[in-house]
Length: 234
Image 1 (cartoon, rainbow, N blue to C red):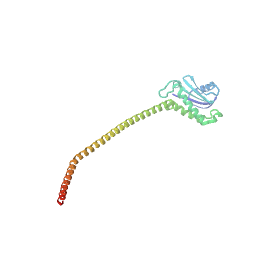
Image 2 (cartoon, rainbow, N blue to C red):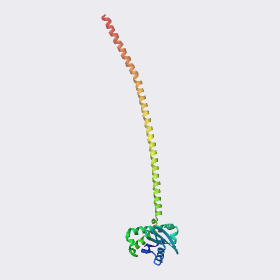
Image 3 (cartoon, rainbow, N blue to C red):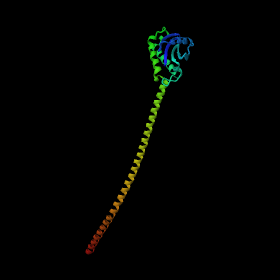
């Protein structure tokens, strides 16, 4: 059933309250609890059992916020609401305290009984329904969900990094292979050039020798002719 009753009080002065059930003595029990709360400047959180209900109380700077939840809600874990050990009721009280102080400020210290009831009872009703029925109202449950989401994102990012690493490794491997092929191509090109040069050299060598022989023979004939002419005139 969740949170059934809520109250905001300054000391013994009730400033606002709301009950989601018509026939209940919650306000009477709540006033008895207000009278039992130790006076002083110390902040406190406490819980009181009455019949099948649990009253949870948060006192901060003489401002008391109180709510009533059924015993099953206040004590046991519900898979949907997760009201473990009154965690949700106290989160409700913290939320109400912050809203009340933000809305009324210093007026809290001087206001008459029920001065804020007409306006703030609607907020009590709204937040009681929210914390009783919305799973996201549980901050711990919400944080666990956010952590689960973050963990999933991290795992996904890690998978992407690993995949990118595989692609980089493959790219490096292909680059290394390409470099090796380039070196082999250069070596083969150099060997081919050397082979061609040697072939050309072997082809040109006989021709050069023949040309040299022809030139020498021709020179020898010319020398013999000149020698003959020399002896003729002598």
